[in-house]
Length: 229
Image (tube, rainbow, N blue to C red; front, side, top):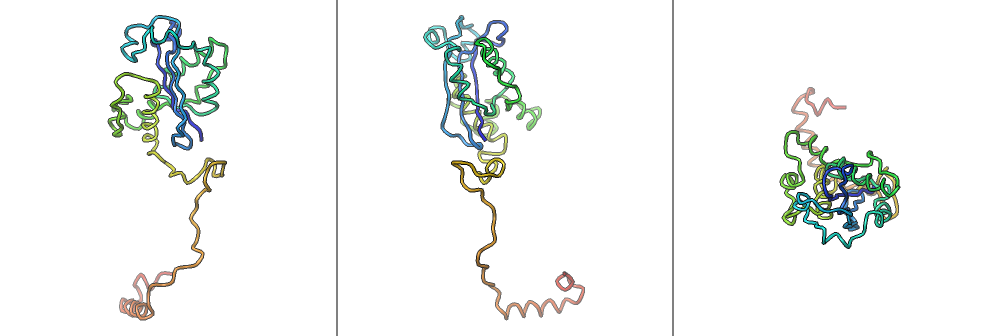
């Protein structure tokens, strides 16, 4: 099962009001394990960066001026994510920006049902508790000391660790079963317990067995060991 843990940075909160993407970061997981493949791209938003947004991620006009516009990177981004599920913290925010940008370059939108929202998972699992990415790092003991500013790739890497903890740990199925119980290229054979080819020899001697039987007889006919079938 392929999943893409994804994060974005933007110029603001509403694409309908002229806000744009300025950074995309993504980490690939396969069967809940990082593969080492990542996607990272800064994007020229073709507009000025508001001060409030700059204070969040530190990406200013001069830095972004020579970066590609979204139309130039859209195909590579779509090819990277493929048909994988997208793991996103507060998925509705990132998805509306991604789909707005895709719409502006006349590419199909990403269906919302492909998104796994870790914010919603955290709120269901820990009702009433803080559910920000920083709060979840504290809860799970994940080191986020490098996160002085928001950054899409770093946040994706951190979110991948948080996601795996939210769903039950780094290897929730211990890697013993492939999706659907079948073996695919690059995966090890599905493990199942099997009988020993040669049974172990009994460790109880005949004298010990007779001594045990004699003891049971002293307990009477109603003893559990005498009545079991």
